[in-house]
Image (cartoon, rainbow, N blue to C red; front, top):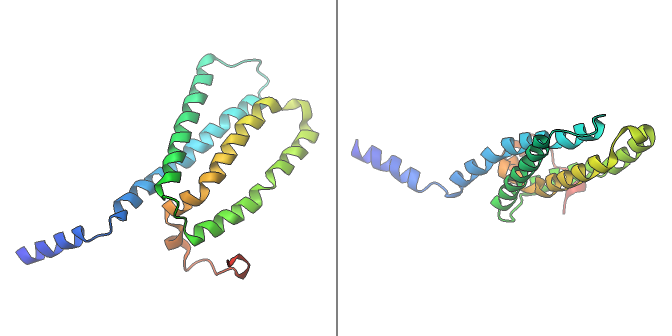
Length: 162
């Protein structure tokens, strides 16, 4: 009985130290994504709304959420200590290739909707949030453990080799 308990304790003590860190990082990903979406709603509603002004507390809420979003993204970005897994880099590259179309979509929206959108409200809010997401994406995918999730599910892409 004592040997059994000692063996279990030895297993716990010899576990890689990154396991606890990985759990901590993974628990930031979903709240970070939700916070990103909620934060993105503010400039979108403000730019599409016909209201001349919003209550002051809405501005404080937007700024507070933006601050928390930046802190969470910094934590996610620094949690990998600059070590991005290959699969995370490949997926990020594919996301970047899609995201690069966003300026063209906004240009078409500008020509179609013109004055109906408050561009001076939408573009700054959308720009820094999009930049932050794309900047943290490789670290976030690494923290999520995307290599272990998709290793056997996604075939190797010969065009993505280094």
